[in-house]
Length: 523
Image (cartoon, rainbow, N blue to C red; front, top):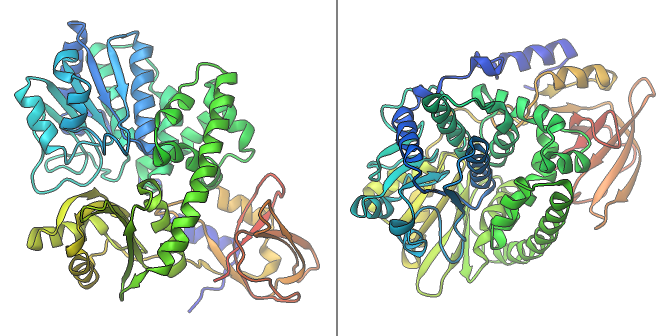
C-alpha cells in the first residue's frame, strides 16, 4: 500500500537510507593503504621516478577512464615529473584497455620502464604475460569485478580483489587511480593537494553510475562544489553551460559529451577538454564534443529503431543483434531499451565473421557480472566479458547466442532489494520550496540514492504547451488545492495529457527556468 506523506515523513524516510555510511567529510575517507598493493604500487612508481624512468599510463575510452587518465596526467604534471605518457586506446583500432597489441604498437618494451593501467586491466591476462616476458613493470588499477584468476602484475589495485580490506567495493576507476596517487604522494612526501582532483572524481563517479553512498557520496558532493569554484578551464565551461550544479543536471547534460568522443572514435578529444590549458581552448573543445554528440544521437536513433525491429524478448531480459551496428553506441541503446521495456537488455553487433560483440545493462537489482560469471564457469560460452552489477561488455560466437540468453534468463542473479520508484503519495498543498529544501539536503541523488518520486491525486493540470527544438517535451502548469500555480516539465512525452487531470507522478527539483519544478513521469 502506498504511503501517505508529509514533509516530516519524507525527511524521516530519506534519513533511513543512511547514505553517508559514516563518511560526513573528506577527513572520514578510508586511508589509501587499505587498498591491497597500494603501498607496493607507490614504491614502484617512486623507484621509477628516482631513476627518471619512462611511465606509460593506459586509460579507457569511457568517461570514467578519460577522467582517470586526466587525473593521472594532472598529478604527474603537478609533481613536475615529465617522463610519462598517457594513452587512451582507440575503441575500434586498439580494442579495450591494456593489451599485447597496444603495447607492441607503442613499442613499450623499448620506450617505457613502468606501465600503469587505469580503469582497466583486471582481465588483461595476455598483457600481463607480455609485460612479465619483456621485463616491464606493470601496475594494474581497476574497479571491474575480477574473474577466478588475476592477471600477472607487479602490483594490482582493485577493491574487489580477494584479500582487499578497503571497505567500499563499488568505487569507479578514477577513484582507484586517485587513491594510487595519494599513496604515491605519501611515499615521496609530495606537497600536493589531493582535493584539486575532486572534479574528475565527481564526473567519473556519476558517469559510471556508482552507488551514491559512503565514499562516492562525499566525493560527488565535494566534487560538484569544487566544479563551482575551480579555476580549471573545463570547470569554467561546465559552469557556463549548467546553471544549477547537481548530480542530475551534470549526468544528463554533460556526461554524454564526455562519453561520445570514445563512443564515436577517439576519446582523446574528451581528454583534451578536461586538460584544456585555457578557457578559449576549452570552449572550442566543448563545441567539438557537442558536434560529435549530435552525430552520436543520429547513429544511435537509427540503430535503436533497427534494434526494436529485431528484439527477442524472454521472461527477464531482451536482446537484439545485427551485422555491423556501430559498437560505440550499443551500451546507450541498451539503457534506452531497459527504460522502455523494464527488463535487462543486451545489444550486440556481428563482425561478419561469426563473432558478436556488445553490451548489456541491468534492470532493477539484476547482477549482470555475477550471472555471467556463474554461466561461464559452467558452460564457457563467452570469448571475453567484464563489467560490474549494472553493466557488462561481452563477446561470443553467434551460434552460441540463443543458448547463452536462455541460460542468462533462467539463472538471473540479483543483489540487494529492488527499490520502489514511488516514495509515497503527497497532497499538493505540501509541494513547495520547503519540501524541495528537504530533498536537497539529501543530494546527490542517483544510483542507490534515487531521486524521490511522488504520487499526487489533487494536482490539477490547467495548461500545457509543446516545447524543445525537436518538439518532444511538454511544459505544464498546475493548480494545487490552495489555488497556487506550480510549473512542471515532461521530457520525451509519448502522448498529450488531458486538461483537468489530477493524478500525477513526479520528482521535484529546481532548474534554470523554475525555482520549483515538477518533473513529470508517465508510463
